[in-house]
Image (cartoon, rainbow, N blue to C red):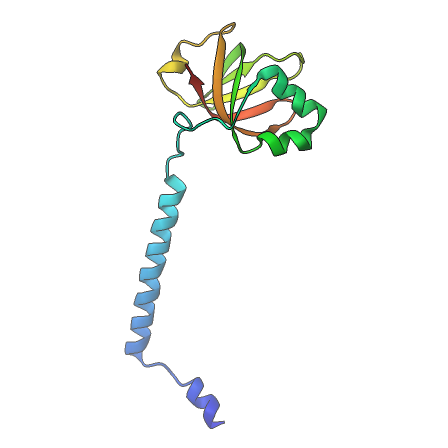
Length: 149
């Protein structure tokens, strides 16, 4: 009984105040770091080297023939795709460029980073786009895309 009472002895007010202040300071530091990480800007792909260079037709063909193998090749990687623009849309404030493929119901959808190179794009243009492949759902999606000269 003596040992239990020594382990669970009451903490005096001064010690409790130090513990609370320490916990509050740690909570503020953790919250500040979390806020910083949440609002940290995404690094542009403009200066990154493409891991794969491929045509829009070949990219969609790879996904249609074997999605699992294509995911291993392209998913989460910087991919440079060349193709013809079918249309350009603005959805939720993001410019999306669709590249034509040999399959009429599939496309390569490129969610573009806004810059001067995207201002003059129009349907029918042949372009090279570099973006991060985020997967396939009847269309292949490239995010953080930039136009390559």
